[in-house]
Image 1: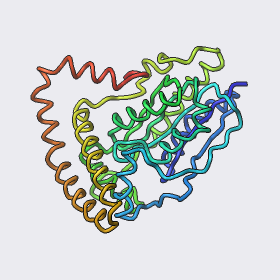
Image 2 (image 1 turned 180 degrees about the horizontal axis):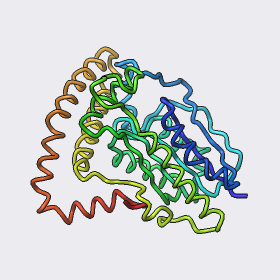
Image 3 (image 1 turned 90 degrees about the horizontal axis):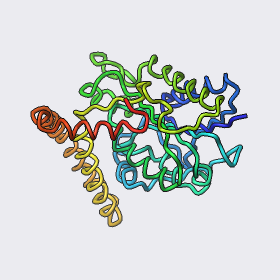
Image 4 (image 1 turned 30 degrees about the vertical axis):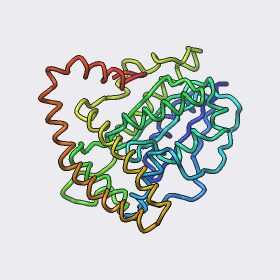
Length: 302
């Protein structure tokens, strides 16, 4: 019997549903599936209190997560591991980072095919780059990536997603679309679970061709530059916030408040300007953009 481990952490329930939809065809095909929900030692709140939400970002981007309960596995080896995660501040959510850094997880991941399953607002490229590095450090083999994003579009989701996180209501503003991934897209994860089940049953070698041609990801060229700029900003400011926090908790919150104002200003100015600049330069950068798009779409491809 083939054994698959599905790892996830879900605050709202959305990512848990995405992971369950992926796992269902495997279970129906007779594959033994272990569903591992990561348990932080200190639960993260949902909805998030305003200051707790933003105060989480420095340690998130610097990969210094809060501890989690030691993961327990039914097997020492798996035929495949599915890592389902969401994105916090252009980085993998802290519980996922903690899992990937845990010695027990590293032992299970070593030399094992891994599929990443991302459910997020719309910006996932930099988070996946971080996950790639953590998987490589663990000796794992990334063979597939599947991404499902919010349906309401980039502009609206700048408002709807934070409102959902801070209020617990997916449609906090009646004049804007609901936050979150559409139900049909959540259910579409089953298509990829079915493909993995076929590959396992036929003893295929799990490699980068597993989900090729299935539309597993879609890279938005307009967001590539914005993600790089924002990731760098999070990293620099996060380092400053943590350094000030070692001196004074009040000073940390003061710098954090300043950064929130700076972040809003950047979202309202730098993000649209970079999109306009990219469009103007697109004819001159066509080949470079195509190479970057192909790179970020790996291993599954668009």
